[in-house]
Image (tube, rainbow, N blue to C red; front, side, top):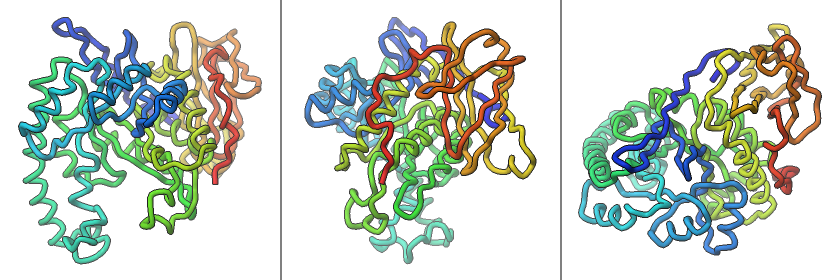
Length: 419
């Protein structure tokens, strides 16, 4: 993958057969019915089958499951499930029984460790509220007290965590991946004390509030977690709620649902910066049906691009801004050029809050003579001497493909303006 003309590595590890059992890929994608899937997930498991079927029809392929019965429901909807486990408690008999209860389930795809495990003993606001820290935000000041506390907790938790992971590895002959989600700014040094024993890292980030709609932060966050994990697969957990829905503690953040355009920006910023999965948290609190409809329009769009989402980027492609130095200032354009069989996709994202009128994509000689379509739009896209020139509005996403078959038929919600 190349971002704004800079090469980015993308490990491609194929699914393989091991001892007659389908083993799971080490690149962050999921095997399913003989194919590799980009995870499009929800923490929410709808309580009614109609809601679950609607979620599945929107291209979602992975949901959080707490029991074998949950996995049964996921399987009936042709979904995969991930199972959260209390790995920070160690290799206990209770953990062994929990693993054993679902180990043979065909819908089980991923094990998840404790959510924000490192954050919870370092920067979690509850540490001040409960009296462990003396003042709010003390972690960021790195006082002797918080350093000592975090080191003590890490020495207690991480050996237990590693023992629990070892138990999973010994029991799970299908080698399902173990995923750890952390907070956006979780401490790098402490996270790296356990990353060597898991398969997927990443974080949650929810940048849309009444006062600030900081969707442009997503790409840099993905970059941070790719660096944190030394290029291990990253899954991003994105916003499926308005902060006010989470209770009185968040009332000051006001009513603010991401628009379709904002949700779309966050998803493609994740993908184009190298995330290997996108999941959504908070929809179980959601009271806004138009917002849900807009999210399902987006997940359906992503699902229609599955062949490209798991494909490598074309190494010969590059992008540059044909502009003055002043116009080029900013984050620029993230992009990917990918092939799936005989078809191509060119994905472009303007990460700046300003227009770019001369976005030049080069290295497209293989597309000479082919017709390109702007998905979900109508715009000429001629390839001249292996080059495509595009104009882009602030924070705009443009997808060009060799066929409109990669468009989703699900259009309701694409005009959702947010709140």
